[in-house]
Image 1 (tube, helix red, strand yellow):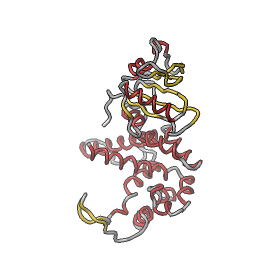
Image 2 (cartoon, rainbow, N blue to C red):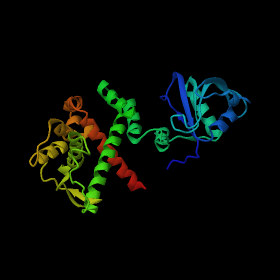
Image 3 (cartoon, helix red, strand yellow):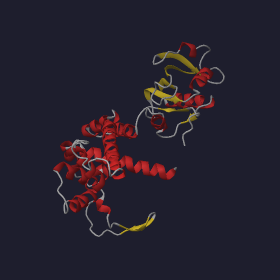
Image 4 (cartoon, rainbow, N blue to C red):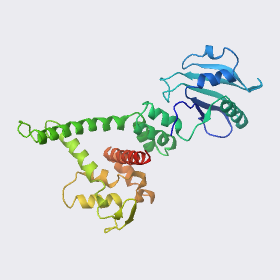
Length: 304
């Protein structure tokens, strides 16, 4: 569990030798730690979001490296906490000694992804944006990078929020119709409360994308076994079962078919159809991320 009183530090750039390395430190103790490893009165010269040259010193006062320190006071930082970024020479020994000095002065090693986790917990980004950070870093194609950047910019989160607000509005209308039968409240929620086509599609995708799991498991969670009565691909099976009872638009069928995204066995086997489906309709990516978010929230609630 993240301790907000703990100040963390880690190398933000890739490990190894290079011209420059960046070490990031975040938490309430940043300024005190900087005071311990820099000359007197240096921290008084720091200005928000400006790089300031300084000599980082060890416990005996010997120089470790000449570095640029950029100060980001809370809440206007990546994590929403007091943050310092130290740009030093990229030698492995230099960065190692500098990190050890920060730890000696009171910082703790950051856990993998902890800076982004703090940004999420402090409201600097939503869960979709937090998940997109690694997607941007690991993107292997222009399409993957474009999708990750859209998610990081909050595009998917904004759409999810809008849809959530619409669905809450519909739910309130339905509950009012049930609770107050004597009032003149129409049961119709389609035309006035929603943009019909969009929200109908959202309901179809959200409720039916995993219908393939019907009669798939035997037993109760967590002691269950797989007993698949119709071995087909995950998304393909859902589309097949749904279309036995109702029509789907092409975009709805594609979204359900590929809602597993890169986890789909066909994609892992080399199929390029996922890329074509994502280019055809944004619903493919949006349903995939909505499914991922729901899964992560369930796991988080189980941990709590």
